[in-house]
Amino acid sequence: MNKLTKESKIYILKLLSVLILSLILSFLAGFFITSTVNNQNSYYQVTFTYSGNKDLSNIVSKDYLQSIKDTDANKYSTVDVDKLIEKRHFTIEKIDDEYIIKTKTKYYADFFFSKQQRVATRAESFIKLTLNNFVDSQDEITYKNKNVVELKNHFSPYLGGCIGLPIGVIASLILFNFIKKEENENIEDNKTLYKTPFHLSYWKESLDTFKDTKKMVSLAMIFSLLLVSKFFILPSGFGNLGIGFGFIFLSIIGLMYGPTTGLIIGALSDIIGYFITPQTGPFNFGFTIQAALAAFTYGLTFYKTKLSFSKILLSRIIANLLLNVILGSYLQCLIFVKGGTITNELFFETLKIYMLTYSLPKNLLTLIPQSIVLFVIFKAIIPVLIKFNYIDNKAKNISLI
Image (cartoon, helix red, strand yellow):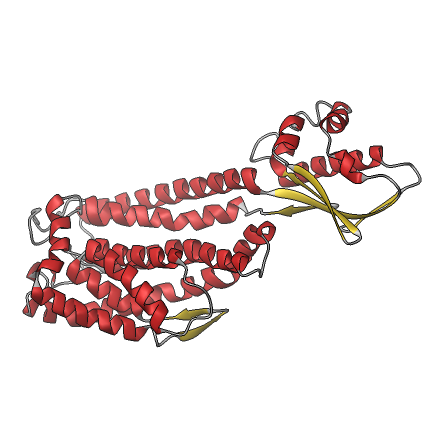
């Protein structure tokens, strides 16, 4: 076995350095983005029963809440009473025999990354003080939950950071697969292969598909196979999520015709596929965008470039983890809301459960197998595509990296 050359060692060192840096930055970005979203959307809910004669709706008063804040101005310094009232960020409603108080978490934190337990304790004391000072001493308040306050619409920042990690991998792969200079082979930017997609001619060639009769005929044939594949969905074992084969044909279209053609075909495949296959819900244009972006990704990754397994893996990371897990889970939970399965208040909690229990495990388990399937299929069909002049001969060899 040959020893690694000095150039190879430097390349590997650079790759590892960029990968580690990208992972750190993407985790921090995911952490702080999630924390910022939580700061704007999460809220505390207090459920309790009350026996007494007071009208508890009167506690939602600027003067009264200000008086509660003044009992400990330092402790409740972040509680902006004016905004609590103006933006309805402190509400109380009665449902059957129970009362429910809801208030945004951001009013009880010193910073958006304050410790969750400390913030919850501060909110609990403020709400309990608000109720106890309002009711008569002989009245009784019974809280439904042991911890009094329940945190809603909250997504773990650490989990958000972990979801951001694939972005770091993607950034590293893009850097070393599209931007780096080829050391062993001189590939000029021309009308055959491109080192980067940042060329006007690259995009023009992709659009030329619709001007070429030969390309249109072959595209129609592959598109037909793509539509047929929508009838064959394997159960994944993760709820309503199935394993389809459409990604294979979308990848071939991306390889042969590029990102712009892929974007259009991806959108059409979802729209037509909805009407020709059995469906249980209304049409959702969000899934059309998801399919179009997936096909666009395949085109951007495979079209007129040196192919490698790492590029195939890159395309699957984007499709599985970004488009399926994040965008797909979001769209699915919107369907739950519109269908009346869940309420708006439970949206983020349901999103978290659906993403972690169903979408993320399913897409992680299929990530490598789908990448291997594409690698094998490309190895088999590329010589044929070269023979019939669909792709350039320089793209013949598919490397691992």
